[in-house]
Amino acid sequence: MESKDLHGFASDRPITKVEDDLLGRSCFSSDLADAMASWQGNDSLVVALHGDWGSGKSSIKNMALSRLESITENKPDIIQFSPWEWAAQEKITASFFQEISKSIGRKDKSKSGKKLAATLKKYGRYLNTGETVVSGLSSALPTLFVLATCEVA
Image 1: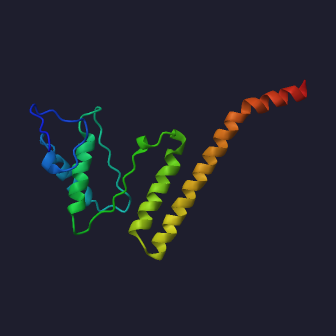
Image 2: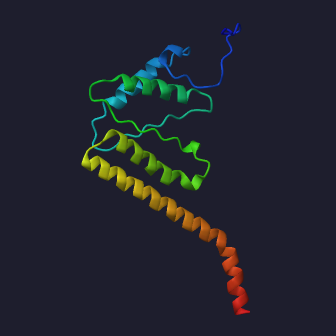
Image 3: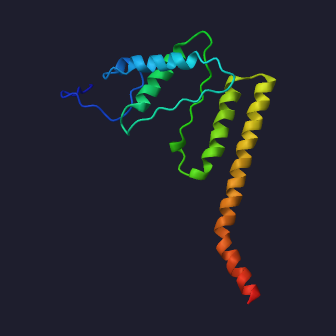
């Protein structure tokens, strides 16, 4: 038995489909999706939504993605990356390249697509290894400094 909220309260979760839009943002999100889909440049297109916490950025993004998914002709490749999902700030860059690699590997099964995915995956591992070495070295520096000064004394 489903209980219905009598007072119209809603959770603070972003909406995922246009049908749930009660604030009239669906036209903007549809126009945003159409603008992104019409991108003809040779470089990647990166889009950012700026606004206060709770102002509806995620809802607009979700509705725009829904619209982009419905496009059948010249459908753009979309890679979503949410840096706030990574607790360790030093892992964000490596994780970004890992996500791009996975996305390309799923979408482009050609030889060049597989090669690009492997290269990006390797690059992500190098970044991750480099960050681990640097963070390990920086945490060991005080000990190394103490050892070096004891040897001199």
